[in-house]
Image (cartoon, rainbow, N blue to C red; front, side):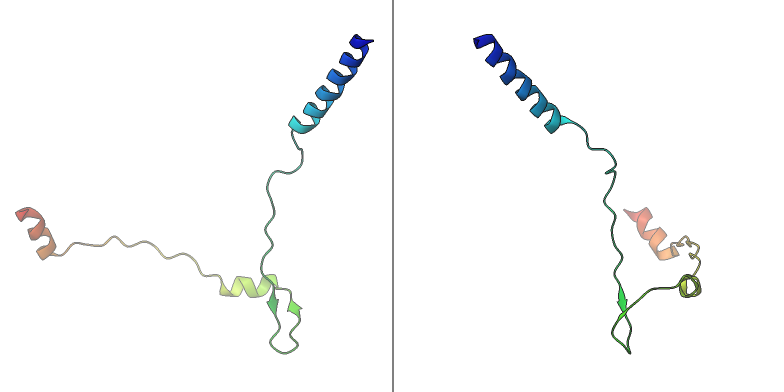
Length: 79
């Protein structure tokens, strides 16, 4: 009788531990929602269109290397 109770308790404990430790599937990352913009006239939420986004997007500027002036170079030499 004691063995039967012991087996039942160990089975229950094992199943609970498996449930706790099992990996969750399908939850890779949380999705962030973008902020909605309200219409200035009606005050309702307005969906942003793809066309307006393309107009405002500008290409990235080239990074310009900064030339050191002659005074900066000479002060570097004197250190």
